[in-house]
Length: 191
Image (cartoon, rainbow, N blue to C red; front, side, top):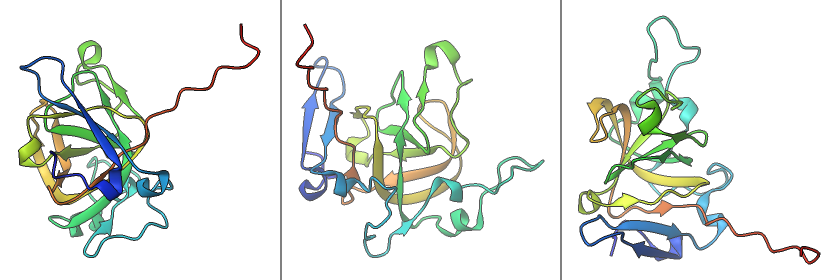
């Protein structure tokens, strides 16, 4: 079982595989909306030693002639525990052990667009714990709440993309994943 999860935070999770040689794909279903920090983490108590980090705290605005420059807050949180709330990037070809989190919902069609896509500059690259590095986290729309160790610096990811801001999830930390979308009830007057 994935040590990354806590029953109090997620409620339940399910496993599915495509073939015997494929990595395990996890789908997470949280217990309730309150556990997700649906209001961007507002009003949610932070665990001891964890600092809230928002996407607007990544880079200085406006962007100047030197390009994206990290904020003092981002630099001060390097190698510290942070909580980030954002949307999982829907990747056409997900990378085992890695997914991206963004301020806004984003779908990136790598096969068609390659690296020319609409990823915001403040995209966070999230690394699963070493025990789950071969697994793919199933895409789920909605807000995700993540806690982990913030790492900074240019690095080429397994996906071939270059990251600057990374969140390393710890096996003892938890993921607050969004609830699955419910199907609308059929209308009584529908034939």
